[in-house]
Length: 267
Image (cartoon, rainbow, N blue to C red; front, side, top):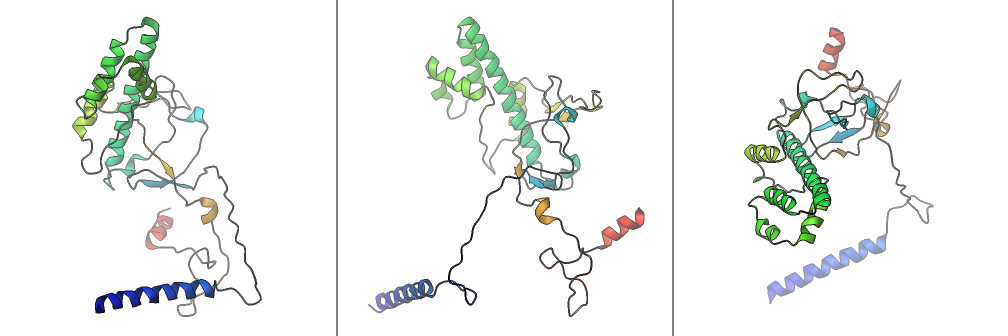
């Protein structure tokens, strides 16, 4: 009984607190009767200085945007969308981005094969090669039996979905391993290294070494250069240390650390 009364009084107290909070209303400046806040959504095109990231902590800043004809391209003329600095991999050891690139490349390769088989079916009317290709892609996974029992219409619908790239999901800690990725690359008829020959878009010449090309998710983060850019002449100082304040909000100075000093000295 005592426990019940205690719980009841606690709930009633919480209720009274919430009622009081609602009745009290927001803190407003003196003389203000009503305040209206308006939020405007704007689309901003990406520009140098904006921040992007993949799904593996591999964030970075856009350093240059060039016309599509200046981007490196594959043997079939396909241009790459983004060029990432390879130095962002070894020191941070986030190898997941490499595996994701290879997986995306393998899925796209298998999609191309299915697309070719679909075209062959339209020409010949024989669906068996297409069914076999889809069976090879599914392998002995949990859906293998289900796919084997598909009628012709279902096979064609699945092929139409997958011709732009096979959909896959890989769990976080029990996902695809290197061997699985190699298997998929081989199945897609691609090199197991996951690398391709690229040509310089500006000169048209082949690059000396093979380059890792693939498909990954890239996200634009809400850290845009237009919001971050800031300069200061003479401004506010801290009363205690007599040093300039920090940050754009305080109209602060730029902190110039040891490494920046050494960079200037070296220059």
